[in-house]
Image (cartoon, rainbow, N blue to C red; front, side, top):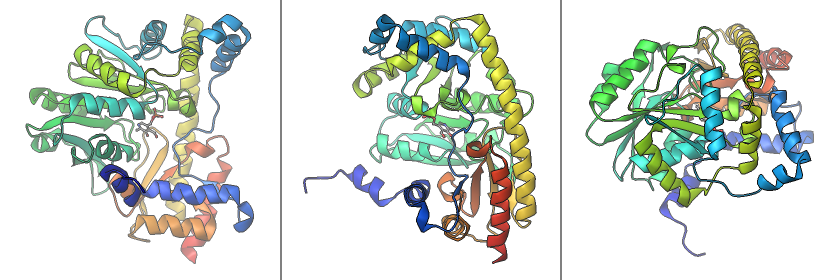
Amino acid sequence: MPHISKVGRYAVENPSAIREIMTIVADFEKHPEKYPRKLIYLAGGWPQDPPPPVLRKALKEIVEDEGAFNLSARYGPTKGEPDLIEAIVRYEEAVWKRPVREGEDAIIAGAGSTELTAAFMLACMDPRDELILTCPGYLNYKRQAEVEGLLTFKVKWWPVVKDHEYEPDPGELSDLITDRTRLVIITTPGNPDSMIMSEDTLEGVLDVAEEKGVWVMVDLAYRAFCFSREPSYFSRPRRENEILMCTFSKELRAPGWRLAYAIADAGLVGAVNAVEQARTLCPSTLVQKIIIRAFSSDENLKDLRAFYDEGRKKYAEVAKMTFEALQEAMPKAVPLEPQGGFYVFFDASAYEPNSKAFCRKLLDGVQVALTPGKDFGMEGWIRLSYAPVVQTPELITEAMERIKEFIGS
Ligand SMILES: Cc1ncc(COP(=O)(O)O)c(C=O)c1O
């Protein structure tokens, strides 16, 4: 066989635990007859509730207008259609109350925040440069850094959960930063922890990083799922070294459409744009056209805000119910109480210290799929996602019954 690269071999030889679980889950779906019970899937981070109706209406209008449909099939500018950029500015201001300042803030759209984050890494990091991630943190960042940096970027962990408490300390972050550190990534509300970083802590992180000339990416994927007051950093003007990473995947319940955007320093966005010219050419024009239409009127933007407010109430209820049911089903587990987002993250090491083994046994034994904490940097912990059952929360009750049965056995 002709050559496979070092990074290609590394990726194959070090599969992520969540991908392994996904392979088993795919088998469940293809061959349900092989398994005693129907799978209850609480592993992935995708919302079960449908996108807001305004998106369907916008798509229908495009499809029914031949001229608009034909235009939606063309290539567009790499950083997004000018009309999309304007629509995003209106959306940020109307829905999130965030001012986007001409000259100081630049916007670039991308084919999902996964892809856009990779482009930011390439635009701000050289071989042997350092990236700091929270521990626990979103599992894909480390992998992206490995792949994008051809195994030359160094990943450092900033522990933010200690003794089962979420206590991020910007002083500890400061100690980790060296003259090779280029980027820190914070997710708030967090994945897998569902914690919301306090305003003081995030400003502290930005202060520390600013003093040392480091970019801070604030991943706001779960901002529409905040269970109490939204923090001021959702709406205040962007700080100089801050990269705001926003995706439509979760808030618009459209993860398969692959559209996201970042608001960042104009010079940095210029570099990301140039990198993206070689990687993606442009984000999907059809999806951009849908968003442009959907964000075109003040009324639609008001409806979107109402959709988010309804959604976060629903998610908060299911989160509370899941948290309480889990404590009942697994009294020796130690969960973090979700403040936002899609997940209950809990220490299950009193039952099984190996999180991959726990998930595997649970899946084989009682057909409930959860995600091992190991990939998020915390062995012994498990992530439960209630997003795939937010419309059918009775499945949480059934999953907990099965978990009790599993533990009992
Ligand atoms: C924290 C976080 N950021 C980014 C993503 C990926 O988002 P996108 O669909 O925009 O690539 C996810 C997906 O689960 C996530 O949890």
